[in-house]
Amino acid sequence: MKLQQTAPQPRLLMGNNEMRRTEQVLVLGVGIDNVNLAEALRKIEEYVKNGEPGLVVTANPEIVMLARMDPDFKACLDDALLVTADGIGIVIAARLLGKPLKQRVTGIDLTTALFKQAVAKKYRLYFVGAKPGVAEKAAENIRNSYPGIEIVGTQHGYFTDDNEIIKDIKNKKPDILLAALGMGKQEKWIAERVEPAGIPVSIGVGGSFDVFAGAAKRAPQWVQDAGVEWLYRLVRQPSRFRRMLQLPRFLVAVLLSRFFPGK
Image (cartoon, rainbow, N blue to C red; front, side):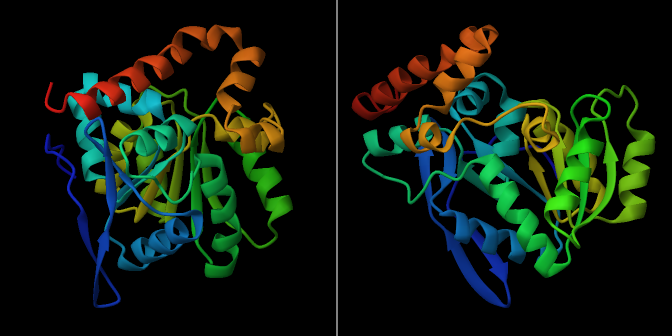
């Protein structure tokens, strides 16, 4: 995949000999696909069948703000197969812009639902990222929770030379690769290294391996439903405070884009 600095447009996708248009909501220059969880899973199924390599991104306000500062990262988002609304801030922004999204589709919800689909569709999965031992433990827990799931490889994310990792990925030919290397880094690595390896679908999953491995806990369901997972994470990890400052900055930027377009 070549990195391109182009404005996101509604994508025309070929699948089952039928043209499909993906409706997008533009949030600070980043196109967010207006899909619910079921639609996102169907699209991933189409992409796996199609076999052409591509990236799936679950976007939060931090990702959108990073894209404004990093043209190469922005190009990854522009070229992605699918960009869902991970953070509640994205959902709020779409409402402020008068273009509400169907549903918040978080990375961990998408990947969790994908495990069930992987069993039914016999997808082969590969995990890369997190601290040594975490991806392996996550894979073990997932195999126990989803009997029959095929996770063909795991690698930690603390590597300096990825040649052997890419060779292993090519040899094992997964249908879907999950990368937990951190925002920005994981998407660029997928675009530069994994897509040329011919993997049909790759998804940046951030800290999800820690949750699947039991090393970190997700917020209680009522906190998720209230849309304040960011506050739960901040209370548990005060070191995230500087990152959380991006949320008010993001909302201010969205409001300015609505009332002063082009500024």
